[in-house]
Image 1 (cartoon, rainbow, N blue to C red):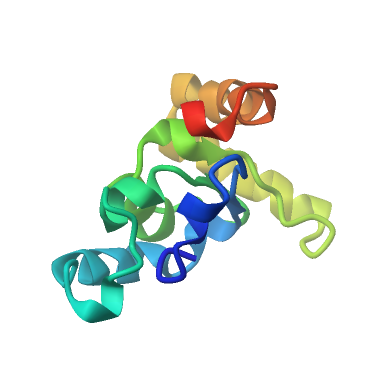
Image 2 (image 1 turned 90 degrees about the vertical axis):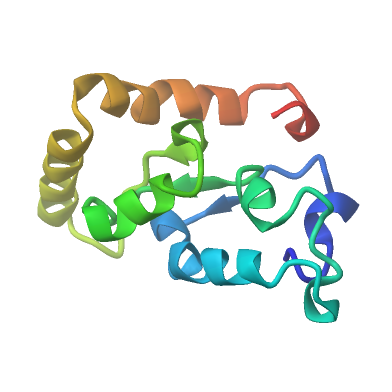
Length: 130
């Protein structure tokens, strides 16, 4: 999306990436190192890391320092919303991951991810004001 300039062409879209953005947390720092090269000419002027903070990410089956921690080292916590991966994961697995996520985050951060961040994401305001 960034290399094609999509976030700037469609600024009103609120993008949500599942599973904490997948491999994005591993790839983003490498892309940031080579900003300004011709291959990354389409990355918005704000740069790779600022552009990633325009997106939202869900917590589907992501509850450890390896995935959630990596993402939170790059983007603001306000960009994280609750995800379940249901129906692809059964209820018992989802419930267990929620418990692990709550332990990892603590009650205040978990409350923001469960409700506050999602409320902001789904509000009627424009994505440009995010």
